[in-house]
Length: 271
Image 1 (spheres, rainbow, N blue to C red):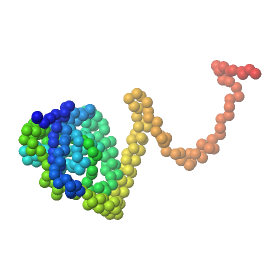
Image 2 (tube, rainbow, N blue to C red):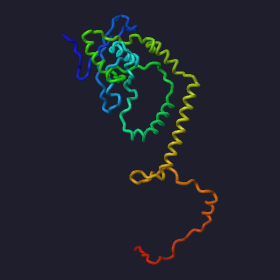
Image 3 (cartoon, rainbow, N blue to C red):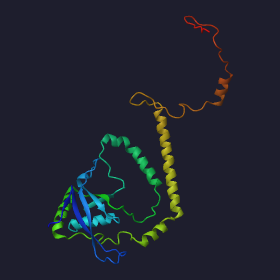
Image 4 (cartoon, one colour):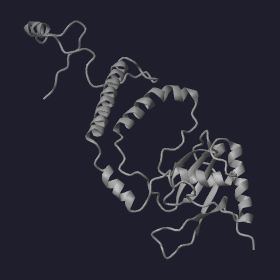
């Protein structure tokens, strides 16, 4: 009986997991199943035509791991994968019109600078994925993606499944006790590194505050598309000078009118 090649709209991609040093009683490789299909997110992006959506990614997956798997499917040719976006990471930028990009470009650049300034040194040298997670693999072109899908269909006949992590042990940090030892060391970064992060954050924060103040000042006299003027904190002019305040204080107050003027109508309240 031929092995199942698809399930729903996913193509089944078996891979071989090497034996783990922590499981000495199981010295054999284990088959793990990935499920792939062309990426079709709800919000389209410019890279959808050359991207694959991968489900059931192993917990120790890295960019190098997935690049190795798809290099095996491409006949050993490396460089076909442009990028890998794991679940929880920043997605690919959606398609936007030129007008929207021009209107929001400056504000997005300021927010990006502030976010980079807030970023502190990472305390893990390698991220662990959650079980059953997913990823988006972006190829250099659509032909490379289609070639991988064809190779997966042929793979079920030859059963020459790719070996997970083959040839990349020197490219990724080790797991196990060494990972936690490295984590303990990274929890105490150099004070100069922390000071640089604090200085960068305060510089970006002060620049953002000044930009917001200039924008608020500009909008005080600029009506919006409905004809309304934005009300912001603060007056249109600065505080009054001391001599002007004294002059206004010495001016005699006008008392109430003793009578009604011509053409006015008075009302009498009844008891």
